[in-house]
Image 1 (tube, rainbow, N blue to C red):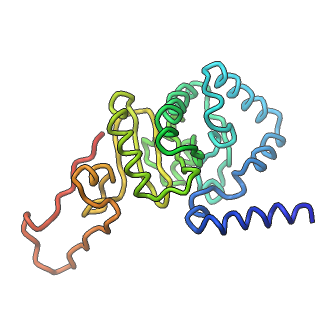
Image 2 (image 1 turned 120 degrees about the vertical axis):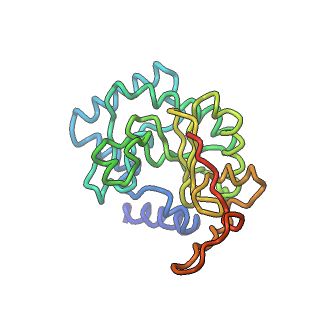
Image 3 (image 1 turned 180 degrees about the horizontal axis):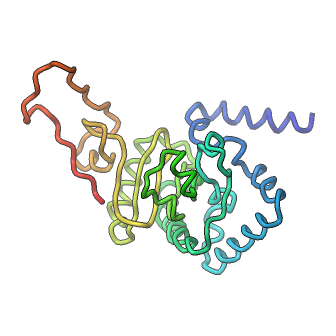
Length: 242
């Protein structure tokens, strides 16, 4: 009975938050309770985490996001038979410190509190999870985030595009948008991406800059065998920023 009540309470929270939250947040295998079990499995896991936390405190970025969140791997960890949590090689730690500072100084002032749902992915897990071969998750500079507040995608687009346009070039920030309220930030290089625009291959930020609706569905593709449209009739995608 003691165990049943917390489980029922958690289920009620998910139901109240709607289907989007259930899609955005990792499963219970990457929860805080699961992280404690992960630490208890092997002394070496605890030693690695302690080393990372000591380093984060020395860099004064230890209190921006909980350790168990910044050590979450890919959402597909179970399908890929990968670890739910992983401490990356020490040489990669400075990459995350820069991203955490961006979260503290720019993301939280714009959106409020956020939760990290994916961080480091080792090369094998990255391939299985269908990540880019050059993914910033591989070098521990990327975080996939979800706002704690009940914000619409449009609100997230407007706020984060404003932040990225103002501070992104100087800080070398990458910004990407996924389904629901999930978005990506990294501090490896200034770029942006998403699935908006007439062709469905643009960043919502580029669409907003043109004064268009980033949530408008892409235009239908011409059917096979139909005569090709003239160049003036075909919307031309904007070149990506790299």
